[in-house]
Length: 216
Image (cartoon, rainbow, N blue to C red; front, side, top):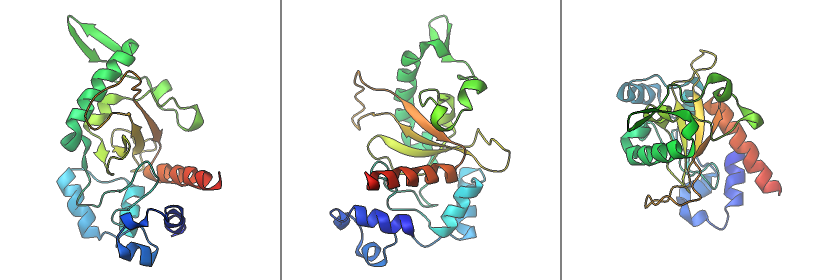
C-alpha cells in the first residue's frame, strides 16, 4: 500500500490517466487472483509460475504503475511468452546484439550463430552493482515470460531458464533496448537487461529506485 500511495502522490498532475476508483481507493492494484486463475494461466503457458510472482498475483492481479519507465503489470489473463507478441523485437534485438558483441558469436560459413550459452556462467551469474547489463544471454528471450506492458522501450520479463537456488524462483529481467516503436535502430542503440535473482528482488529494487527519485 505504501508504494501505491507514494506513486499516486508523485503523479498528482497525471492522475487523469487512471480510473476514478483507483484515485478514490489509493490502490494501484486490482483484486487478487484466485488459485484457479493462476492455475489456468499456468496451464495455458505450460509452466509453473515462480513463487514470489505467484504471491504477488494473489495480492493483486496486475498493477497500474511501478515506475515512470514501466507502467502496467499484466494480469493472469494477459501474461504471455515474450516471443508470442514480440518476435519482431526479439529478431531485431538479436541481430543488433550479435553485431555489437561479435566476440560472443561463432562463424559457420556465411551463417552467424551464438554459442550456447552465449555468456559463460562466471560472467552471467553476477547480480547487483557488479553486473554488466550488456552481458545477457539473448537465447533466453525465446522462452522468457512477458509480465508487463512495454513503456519507453522497457519491459519486465521472467526467465524460466535460471532458477539459481532450485527453489521455484526465476531470474527476472528489466529489459531496455531503446528500440523505437517504428523499429528504426539508431546508431546509439545499446541493448541490455538489468537482471535480478527473482521477481521479488526486482520489485524491491524498483521501489528503492522510485524512493530515491522522490527524495532527489
